[in-house]
Amino acid sequence: MRCILQFAITVVVVLIFGLAAPTGFAQEHKTIHLSGNKNLNFPFSDGVVAGNTLFVAGQEGTDDHGKLAAGGITAETKAALDNIQQVVKAAGFCSALSISVVTGVKVKSADPQARRF
Image (cartoon, rainbow, N blue to C red; front, side, top):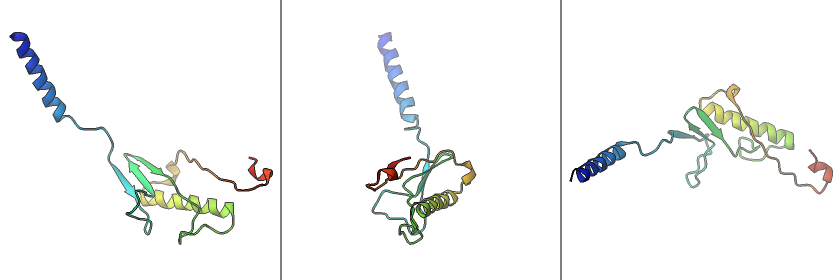
């Protein structure tokens, strides 16, 4: 009988502490939407702040009107970096704290020299 009582007390304690414990350890996050880019039909944002980290993805080399920057890859790259800078500022971060930038360039050319890096 004593064994059953100990088991019942253990189950009750585990349930009480288990239900009182936080449901997860995820950090709170907030999304960053630049003016004019907030489209509620899509789950995309310009940036996400989680804790003290800002995540920025999907920035393209577009101008203020959403059109691809004229002038080739150089102008597009500058426009993409400017767009990232806008997100960083909108989130209240300093760009001097940037740690990692991963870029991708898709080359559409039949010329094999254009594909060499």
